[in-house]
Image (cartoon, rainbow, N blue to C red):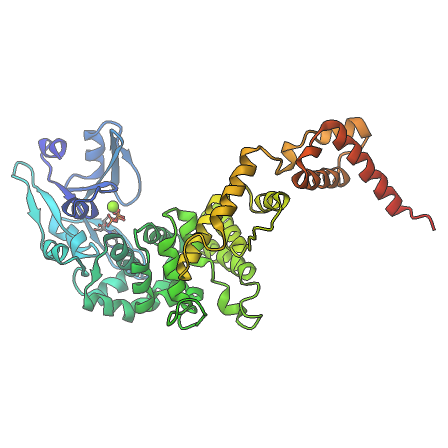
Amino acid sequence: MDTLQSAGHAAYVVGGCLRDTLLGREPADWDLATDAPPDRVVALFPHAVYENRFGTVVVRKVGVQYEITAFRRDATYSDFRHPDAVEFGESIEEDLARRDFTVNAMAWGSPAGAEPGFVDPHGGRDDLGRRLLRAVGDPDRRFGEDALRMVRAVRLAAKLEFSIEAETFAAIGRNADLARHLSGERVCSELLKLLSARKPSIGLKLMADSGLLAVIAPNLARQRGLSQNKIPGEDLWDHTLRTVDAAPNREVVRLAALLHDVGKPDTLDTGPFHGHESVGAEMARDYLAALHAPRALQERVAHLVRHHMFAYEPGWGDAAVRRFIRNVGPGCIEDLLALRAADNVGSGLPPDAGRLAELAARIEAELAANVVLGRSQLAIDGADLMRELGLPQGRLLGEILDGLTERVVAEPALNDRAILLDLARQAILEREIEQNPVS
Ligand code: ATP
Ligand code: MG
């Protein structure tokens, strides 16, 4: 701010970072507003990066990111998601008027040479005190301009643990349908922020009650009113909410918790809910793909949903534990157990119901013993088989290696070069007999 002001420009801290500071929260990043055009700002700050067509200049200093933007005024909106053009505004007041909620529409600063102070034309500080999210201006008009603001309302309510002011909330109900026009990316980024709240159910409930859920996640909205025999008086959606809240605050696990039973409404008649984890895994992947979530995230969430119904019993032998690790993948075990613990809590059970702690301890013991879980840990590899047994590269080679891996997972003592070569010879012989039966 000093740098801008010394050069004769206005400088204000503005938006979410001011809100968070007043709440005693650490801001994620700092936004500044100024009357200096971007090329002036770039000239004033060494290492500044002029990032996009919205006229934002990014300055990084000791690990903190500052985004400096010239006062803006949004021009007309025709597609419910982006202004057709961004124009520079004349004043901080104009800049604040285009912002979404009153608590996000305050500034602290001054024109060049003046003492800094608060600029709060929309009563943001009062709303902050009441912990209320209220649209700046007429909520119907503001949501009509940009439907993402409705999604931002519910995610900010979850993150800040604020309520949504009644008129603003009613306007979300009236305009929810406009969220159809939003790009997957924008919804995804707000949804992930919502899920990272201490208690995501605050935002998810508001989403469902306002009608927004039916538009941006119709398959989850179908969980409402669907009864199941878990907690008396609660439906499947209540179960999902409890599960999400109980899940540890990691992106994959929270998403998997949100989507773990998404397949249930479609498997009502199959025994009931039989196979919902496979149906749900596909639905979860499709949903995240439509949101343009990163591919790896789609796959991981689908994988967790697919495996969340495992049924551990103390009667499992060590080989069964190792096969379980191999199927789930060692890198996913922790997330899967966390998901199941959350699912337990969501069902009104203690987190380690189904002897989860016992299973976790047995898994840990297997992993600590460095047991073989995949081809790469076998005492021989494809090159050995090619050299020693004259096998050509190809499908047979792969099948033999997989067969050997299965054997060693069941019986670790077999992981010895000589033994494995013998087993491979036997396997080849058996195949030859199978293919040329003596009649
Ligand atoms: P977070 O703490 O998650 O960063 P935030 O409110 O700061 O929350 P940002 O996306 O960083 O969210 O946006 C910064 C500011 O820009 C907001 O506080 C708000 O003033 C304004 N803003 C962001 N998105 C919109 C929008 N869709 N419509 C109007 N104003 C917006
Ligand atoms: Mg921010």
